[in-house]
Image (cartoon, rainbow, N blue to C red; front, side):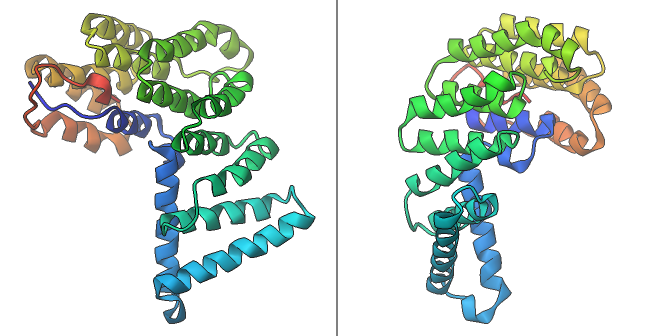
Length: 289
């Protein structure tokens, strides 16, 4: 058998071919903290007087207090809320403060700017980190109630349910969206990416070792969108993880031929890289994109 990778790695690959922004990477909250660490590092490099960790921490704490002062007078000032969130995320990346510190500004930003999905998704991740499963789920439901086809929120919801070992619930969310897709897309064409949803459903079935069902869904997606590389790549990865390279090779080639230029190298890499041994005889097919 070939290598067994984690669900999280799978989702990253899925997101990479859906073309989402970096904020969508899983785990989303950790990703945001990583970005904040980069900002902190940039701050370090920007001036000799701010080169020590203590100096950076003090600077960020001063910035946070400044934004807090503004928000006492203007509680809905989005510029101040964003600045406070960024400062607190950077402090968290330096192991200062608590995750709870970012929840309040995220809640306010998610409410004030519902069109910016990343706030709700990051809020869900933050609540998941503190063990508030219902709060994490509700933050995503709030998005999906008004934007049922929003792939950032759908992807985050699937990831959340999979970490809770609820694959059937994840499939239910996706199937419900797929059922509503024709009506939604009739009113607003292109709102629901049905191929993306089918790929996710196939990946979940494959994760549960229901390979026949997974391949049926991939094939349906390929038939409905023959020029879309995503279900072809997904199927190829599952076949490869099953050790069926002869069947997978033409699919990898086809996916690479159809894919936009920025994804061709990654597809070719996944086609040729050697899997590492796994103690189990079954793949973890959720790494298909």
